[in-house]
Image (cartoon, rainbow, N blue to C red; front, top):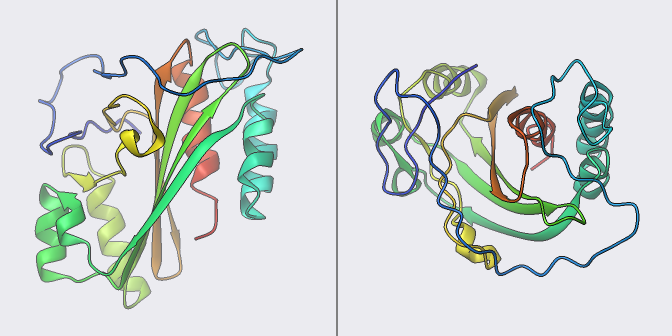
Amino acid sequence: MTRRIGGKGGGSDPAGKAGAVVAAGVLAVSIAAGGGGLSLGGGASTTAVDSAGVNLTKARSEGKKSARKGDADGAWRQMNMRTLKRTAKQAAECVSHSFGQVRDHFAHNRCTSLDRTLFAVGDDRGDVAVVSVAWVGFPNRREAGEFKKLIDVHGTGDITPLGTPLLDLADVRFTGLHYQSRSDGSTVVIAESESASGQVSGDVLDAMADIASWLPR
């Protein structure tokens, strides 16, 4: 699924505009060097082996198993990465934490809860990705399904991810290119990922978003 959604400040990218803009800058995270660490750069297919030797198909499958158990660290280890930092916030409403048509939807269809988590995940070579996960609660399954149909459509806005400066990272703009959503009863889970430093391929970012969408609230 290809979605282009606005980042900091809201709004959507014009349809057909190629590429993604990520203002990562210099990271303020110190990554300890370790033996045997593997970089996840390159343009590997999710059906093949990544250039660092990671079988992304297997890593995605095993990572989701760990995620379902609530083991985020175990999930990232399947990608030869680890949690560097993590932050989380809860909110009682969604209007002020969303933009675009998604915000308009919340103005007329309340959410019952909003939990957001932001991870900085990296390897031993300085490759760092940020992963945003949002759990949006609704009064019932029907309303959750209607919201999922809206947010999955290109250009309709988004739940605003937590800001990467909370993790002592330079500002990273979430483009929506590496996105996954999932319904869980009356909750919709939205996961997105972006490269923050080094070389993290798009296929790896896609896999990380898919894995993160299975983390429990």
